[in-house]
Amino acid sequence: MPAFPSYPTVLPRRSISAMNSISGPLAAVALLIGFGCGALDKAHFVVWLVLGVIAAVAIILSVRLCAAWERAIVLRAGRVKGVYGPGIFLTVPFLDQVANVVDQRIRTVPVATRETLTRDTTPVDVDAVIFWMVHDPLRAITELDDFAGSVSMVALTTLREVVSSSYLSVLLEDRRRIDDELREQIALKTQEWGVTVQGVEIRDVQLPASLQDAMSRQAQAEREKAARVTLASAERAVALELAEAAKTYASTPIALQILQINRIFEMNKDRGTTILMPTTMADAMAGVAAINLTNTATPTPPAEA
Image (cartoon, rainbow, N blue to C red):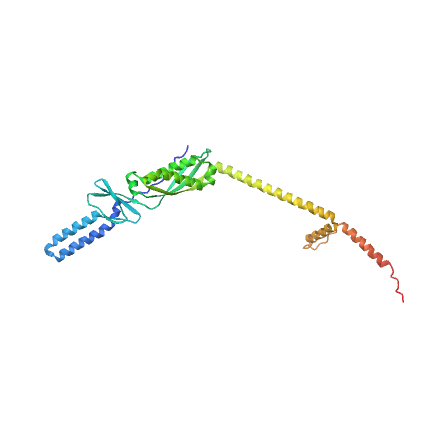
């Protein structure tokens, strides 16, 4: 039974209340100012204190702060007022509402498919990662309920489509082209949502164990074939060289005798043994010895006075 695809996990949205991190200190300052003015003007102490409280409440309800990578969508009476940030901005209490805060940094979403059939009907498990960012916060918030989850689902379905339309050899050998195709298709589907797909990378392609064994045996057979061909070529080259050497030794017997002496010396230079072998060289040496004996037996005529 095929496994269900693993859906990517979407991170929770940032809390809007975190935008009021600057409101608390400013409200405290307003309260201290009101209390200080009331202490100086004791006759109107209550008035100054009430003014300080009203100013503190107004600051808490109206002062907002966005980080450098954030944008806030503000609604006034239910209608879009605008996109604010980064930095400090003001809202009208009880009339304006911060609908959402959009993070414009690049996000990564891991996507995985399990036992997806390729074009040549091979089940594979593919893991990929998507890099994307929001370039239009207003469209991402007003046109989608959950733009991050939508991007993740589109990435998953597109990955399955591309894997199903590709051959296994292309997935294994030409990942860069598959990455570019995935990025183009996902960007085409999400560009109307105010989302930009920066890149797509396939992290891993896992094959069934039986297919891995078959591919391993095929690769081993190819290596053995190449080794045998190389060995045969080397033996043929050696045979040709030996044939040329045989022709040289046949035309020059002295060269063969010198080779024999050299081989015998190399074989026994470390052993200290003596090897006697009947060769034509010994016959030649016997003839030379007989000539020397004849010359010795012949008397030398005396020199004339």
